[in-house]
Amino acid sequence: MKKVHLLGVAAALMLAACNPATGNRISLTGTVERDIDSLSISVMRNDNSDTLVARVPVVNGQYAWRGTADSACIIRVYYGQGSRDFYRFIGEPGDIVLNIPMEGEGFPSGTPLNDSIHAYQSNVARLNAKANELGAEVRAAQTDEERDSLYEEQRKVWHEGNFYRADV
Image 1 (cartoon, helix red, strand yellow):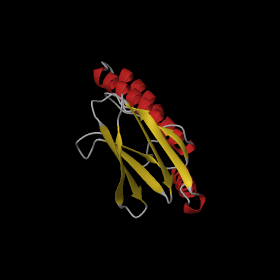
Image 2 (cartoon, one colour; image 1 turned 180 degrees about the vertical axis):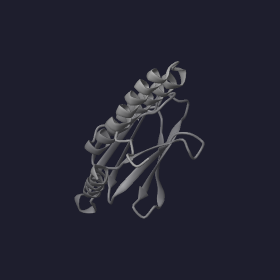
Image 3 (tube, helix red, strand yellow; image 1 turned 90 degrees about the vertical axis):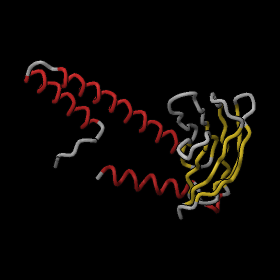
């Protein structure tokens, strides 16, 4: 129930943040550690259309783009040749920073909703790593008592992240 409520609030905030009546300014800046000379920025509207709005040059490993949020939107920044090479985040007014590392994930920050999503994703990644570590320990356990103790610890991690389903 908490998740449904939280998602509803997030959706309402996103719609309010991209309200066409406010003419909200979006500033997107960051660094790029990959060997690319431009980024493609597209906006995905609430009707699922995906529109390319800009090709942004990468100069000395940095880029900058300015736009407006004229409706509820999700912004995608494509940084590679493949259709899977992109970052997705909420287009809301403010100054968004997205650094694209050589490897791994970059997370947008600088606006309330993007900061909240980053905090959530970081927590999920931390809990998944802990659960995977405990899973490896369970597989290596020598006794039933060890396994039971590790299963209990793993269950607590899943409860902490609300990943656990009582009906399973």
